[in-house]
Length: 227
Image (cartoon, rainbow, N blue to C red; front, side):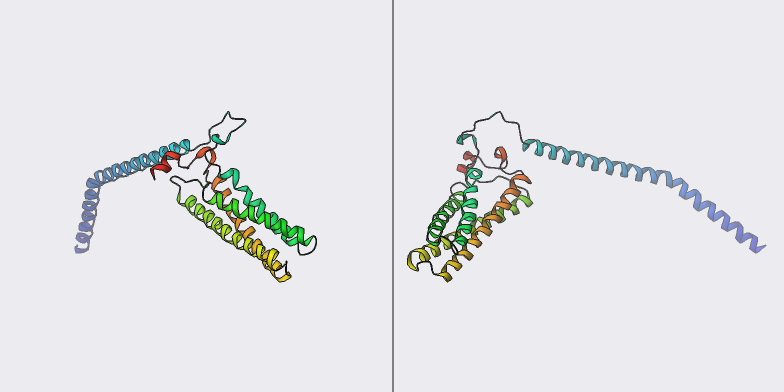
């Protein structure tokens, strides 16, 4: 008898718990469903806003078709890309002529190396100072690439300047002593290495981050004067 009473109370307790959970369950689930729907709606709204900003940003900086065929210097937003190839070519040629001067036409190649070094150093200085464009707001990655580009450009100026000085001493004072000529080869190799890296990071800025084409991400002359 006692055992049956216990079973009866247990059944009634289970029915009570079930009824209570059923009474509060729909409302609770309804509120949770509303909260989830509101959260999803807010997330979709945020995603839509971010997407619109990205589209607007990409549209603002997209490359527009141009009708210019015979471009004048004034058509370019900066002369940097027109002049930056001079130090690259001149310093690489200087390395080849200096290396050749160790074996053949020593005096002639030595003098030619000095001329190429002078042009390479001078053009590297000009494109890194007077013809270096100022950039606008860049992404974090593009800013890091720009920093590396400028760093190797500075290396190029210093190393090519040292190489030019060593070459002048070797050609005019030491009469092209072999040990000095080998030292000049090493110095020009360093300049060629640094200018190659500067060119690599410059190409990364232009072709991967879109900095420069049609003046994108570059400050105008009016903006530069404001700074």
